[in-house]
Image 1 (cartoon, helix red, strand yellow):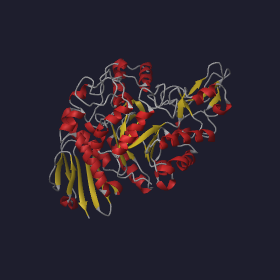
Image 2 (tube, helix red, strand yellow):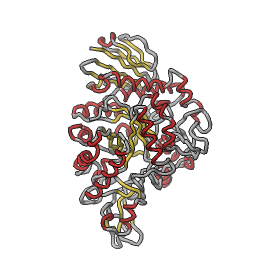
Image 3 (cartoon, rainbow, N blue to C red):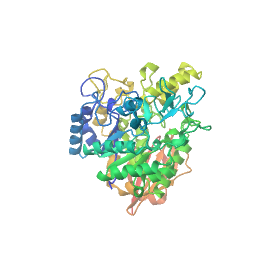
Image 4 (cartoon, rainbow, N blue to C red):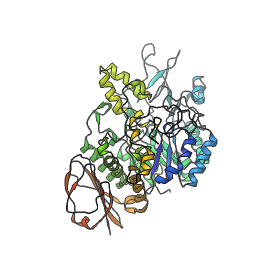
Length: 552
């Protein structure tokens, strides 16, 4: 079993990280070119978003060939070089696999369209309803808007797509499908891959009987489905267990009970899970595309509940604020204004890096990248964003109101180019960037961060080092602390070696706090305001984070 408690994982959205050949799009050689930077940061694994051949209707999550490299990102030889060079720096490569669906351009689906009976059963095809069979088999909704069913031309049949119409769901109840996917995993393991991030993995188990959902959008029928644990145990036995892979499942709308089963080593399913409850505390009535203020008390309660309950069942969390599907946390949960930039960015980092679990850093997070505010829909390319722009307009929102929602929620917020240098192309490319460059590049970029010993980058580097050197951060118990302090997320981590008190203040005005006597003799392990002494009564600065270590 791989030790994941001391590790930190860095996520790269490939097309926006670094362009090595001037075509405006990030590529695999671009990652290789920046390995020294990632080694300096100290990360253990690099998770790379999909780079397989794809029509790119959903940024590569619509895979048309599981065992190839899309030419726009490089070659298989480039990937082999990346694996080799990363290993020289003690960095593993984690790839992103989509096992819930394929592109409709995948050969399996194309064979299914030709009525090949073997491949027809690789997907979900159902007859339509209504007198003319023109209505979808169920009223389930796609995650991207509209029906989850698409009618085939000149046929009464529909196929299921929980995501885009070009992403057909695979039929995991078919053993031949599962075996074909296990061969895909084995192919990449033989290439030297050390980790797998598995996209929307808890949606692979569909019900035997598909029926209308009269109280929701259909997700209750296929989220954490009845066969999910059976499938994951088989997947683990036939693939993961052979090489000791680090595995993380993206688990949409999952429960704590299921997450424990997914990630408890005794269950032999996954190393850890991504869940997203803490990233929905600014959704209005649970709807992503309806804005609301951050419900901080709910955020705090979610963190505490998941940390305590996952530990009680020996489950393991993937800890994160940001990824390629989320707007950046800086500016969402804190201010993103220059006056608070360092404190807010480091506060967010320390909040999760000192918790129990494996922290993930999304590219640019380590320099404090913020969301751009593009004024026109033409600046956005994300399919989900464009679909919801249209839907919001149809609901009667004005252009200004619609763009306010788009600016806050679009996945393109996190997909703009990595800001390497202060120039019009962000040091990302010599060509024309695929995505617009943010104006913030003038004051947020890697070159400046590396030259400033007090930058956000070096704070992240220290957090990574602390996790490696302090077992209390890796495996210590988690106990919520200062639970009645309104804008404070605080907890104790404790094991046989030490007790750690972590205090994270999410406010913009000074805040008085009384520290426990026992910790006044402790060591200030971490501070983002250069606090160098402790007192019983302290005044927390805006967005202050403080960690005090008390050895035993």
